Each structure stands twice: as structure tokens, then as C-alpha cells.
Length: 416
Image (cartoon, rainbow, N blue to C red; front, side):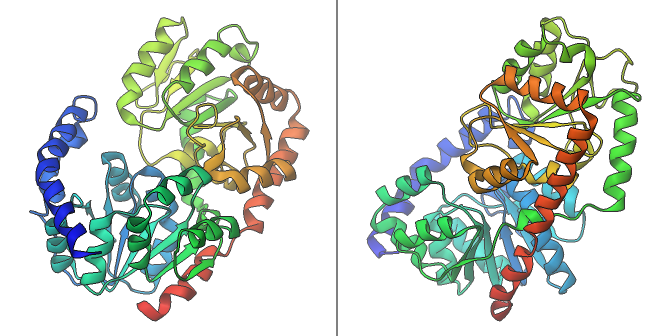
């Protein structure tokens, strides 16, 4: 980074830091996690390095996406530090990793905080999951001699246009990278067009998700707790506004009496509001965390963390969250890995290639709105043979795309 920019950026953070802390406090009104561990964000509580690999996973999606690569690095005996930005991301990483890695918040991007962070943790290699470029982190890693990679990288056309407007700043950040491991050729070409060096196509490591015997067992236990032998379907990782669309559509739909709806919101701060909303619409509502879920519950709120595969495992179908909103969709690979067919709304730009391929091979269906989504779920419930065929296609779809973790590791080995 040019010296003038670093000085300007440092001055900007002097004014922005109180505002950033105030924003965390305000967000803490709905999610208390934002008010915890604040010393980590100010680099006042730091683990002692050196670490072999530092991985930054912003939130829940990135924390889950990193796991195939994390497991491979742990098998290589690497000492890992995982940082997150959101409380849900931090909680998810801790739930998935336990004491096998150190988990903390990444400090604010102020250059002096990032310099303190790198001085303490001293990683050999830094991995940014998907797309998360910040001037302080990029410049700090370069100055600290940390080989910084963007892995499982993706860049939508919308994001590429935004980075292009960054001009010299974007090119300076990309120049700090040791390399980019992109999910697809299209993503790699978008990075290259911005001036990124050393882009490689490795595939999407989310396809390397491991479905363990424990995951299958947890799915059976959870299904027994939630549905008591009844059929159920899942609206997974839903975003704000989508639940209302689904509940409005379900109120007078025949699917209401046919199967239980389990809604798992993307953000835990909306659990209580969603419960109240479903109740106000006249549904019989329960929570996953209830000691006993009533046998006549029509809607169940998935108010727990780290259980997405368990929610999906015994579902008849999954309506993928984020696809009815305009947020680009959440991870459709997870339900496919569990052999469950998927319904996709019109917004899939975060997983465009995967969504197109899933629809093409019969693992998923694309619908224009919530009413059509319910029709698709009901059709699968009424036609078990078609549903089973779609589930088998989903499993085959995931199996056909495995291998990204090994290809990514091959690129990273010289830096370990």
C-alpha cells in the first residue's frame, strides 16, 4: 500500500473506531454476542504464536465452508488460528472445532491493530475464505511476511463491479496476495480482470463436506425429537423476509396439513421474532430447544447452532434460504450432501454454477416464488419415487465435484 494511503487509512480509523464500537453495542441489543469478547476486536487479547496457518472465516457460511480444508490441515499436524467477524461465525467455528484450533475475532482493520495481531500470532500462511479483502489485513500480512491466499474464492459480477470502482486500492490489495484459489474459471477470470496475480481454478471445497456416521445419528435423533414420525421439510438458512413469504403461502396451502415445516433462520437474533410471527398467523408453533415438541406442531423454529446437517438429514425436501430474498442464496451443497432434494428461488448468484448444475441433473428445482416452492415440496411428498430419484441425483451431484480440497492443498504446500 502507498504510504500516503496507509497514513490516511490510519487517520480514518481513529475517527471510525468509536463508531465501530458503538455499532457493535447497538447490534448487541438483538444479539448479545456482539457485546462479548470486545478485547479481541481491539487486539488487547491475543493468542501466542507462532501458528502454522491463520484462517479468516467471516461468518457462519465461511466457517462451515472452511471445514474440509481445516480437517486436511489438522491431519497434516498444523497449528491453526481461526478468526471470525460475527458472533454466529465465532460460535459456529467453536462448535465445529472444539479445542482443535484457536478461535477468536479478527481485530478491526485499523493498521496499528492489525500490525499488533500479526506480531503476536506470527502465522506462516494466511487464508481468507471466499471473498474478504481489507486494506489493513492485506498490507499488514505483506509487511509481516505472511503468505496470504484467497481460497475457495468467488466473485459475483456485482461484487466485481464494486471492486473495479476501487481502482488502485483494489489492485494494491490484490497485489498483496500470494495467490488465489478460485471456485470456477468464471470467478478466476473476474479476479484476473481486476489485476489479480496467480489465479488458479481449484473447485469448491464445500463439495468435500464429510457426512459422518455421527451426523447421520444426530439427524435421526433430531428428526425423532421434532417430528415424532411425521414427515417434515426444512427451510434452511432463511434470511429476513423469507419466512414471512413462506408462512403466508403455507397458511392456506394443502402442504400445511401434509408435513411439518422446520424453519432454521440464518441469524439467531431473529429466532424469537419468527416464533412470534408464526404464532400470530395462527400456526401451532414450537422450538427445537423445547424439552418436548408437541405432536401437533405445524411450524418448528430451529433455534440452535451447528446442526444444519442434522436438520437436513431426514427432511423430505429443503427450501434453500436466501433464494427467495435478493441475497444470492445460501449453501445448497449441504442438503445435497445429505441426499435431500432442494428447492431454489430465483436469487442464486452466490452459487450460480452449482445451482444451474443441480437443477440440470435433477438434484434441485427452480421456482419463481414461495407458492411455487410449496407446490414443489408437496409434489415430492406425493411422489416418493420422484423424491428418491432427486435425492440420489443430489448425492451424485456432490460426489462428482469432490477434490477441491486436495487441489487447494497442493497449491498451499510450498508455503507450509
